Amino acid sequence: MSRDSFQRINGECFTKNTGWDSQIYDQEIHTIHIPEAVRKTGVTTNEIIAEAIAFLHYDGIIILENAIDTSHLDTLNVILSREALEIAANPTHHFNFGKETQNMDQAPPPTRELMFKDVWCNPFAAAILAGMLGPRPVVHYANGNTALKATGRQPVHSDCEFAHPVFPFAMVVNINLIDTSAENGATEIWVGSHHVSTIDEHEPEMLQIKKEVVEERRKHSPPVRACTKKGSLVIRDLRLWHAGMPNRTDEPRVMLAFVVQPTWFQGRSKIKLPVDVKDLVESWELEFDADWVDEVDHKKISSADVDFGSRSKVLGKYQNRIAQKPMYYANSY
Ligand SMILES: O=C(O)CCC(=O)C(=O)O
Ligand SMILES: [Fe+2]
Image (cartoon, rainbow, N blue to C red; front, side):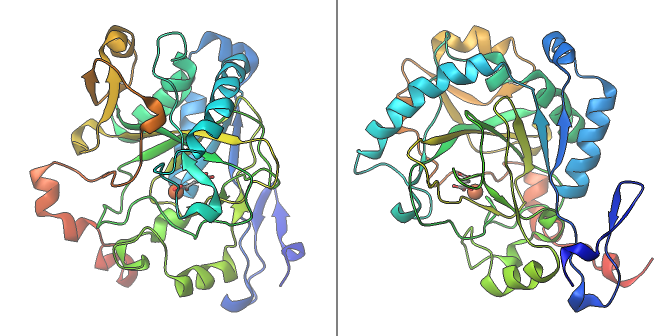
């Protein structure tokens, strides 16, 4: 069955039920546009929070459009595009899933003039994350993915290869510094895959999802690309399957990445921040789990070996149980 046989009823999308093999579900990333007047107030209405949380649970991802002052992104892009070439030339720098992808870590500079609040602690994202994860969510990772010109793609993966809970325990905020499209490497997204994401779908101890599992899902829920306009941010459940795609242009696609976890989860991962921005960062509504140090060379920050697991004793005790869908889910009412 082709996508043409979708039925649209009241704007909602249903598939014609002609048998399991022939169903294809409409995979769309729900976009919420923040009106300019609302963006300027920085106040998140309950309607925005409700829509965002509903679709984060449902799809595992949303795009918040017009959430960021684009002049902040332009300022960062000038600096980070230049630094990208310097970082790529460092032979020890970490590339995600091999050099052929040309997808490398690239963190934002943690200096007072460049730590724009609507980038590091976006008020709309912060309010939505507090709704999703509980009061004063904690940032445990501040880095980025830069896609340089390449032909290779990443394998389909989720960013957690351990026996993680089957409920939301970590959300990624991605901010592209430029418009993204299939041409310049907009991320491939497997909408709704957070519902089926457990350690069992992974290659042993790897981020990659097993090929046969990916192909099985592709039959009914093929991936889409997260194409975004400059000024957007993406919030994604860490469990969602996705992949970095080749940037076929000469302009680097810099995408910042912050990982935010609930306070009660007691995440293990820490970021490094300079002590002279401590007062600024502590005035924000998200907590930053940071080692406060004299100096940070953001060009050397690496995602290799990052651990989004928990320090909680009780979650450790029940780790295996809460990492599986309850048996009664499949078997009864
Ligand atoms: O750069 C992207 O679009 C995604 C990269 C990614 O998922 C990763 O490196 O884990
Ligand atoms: Fe990833």
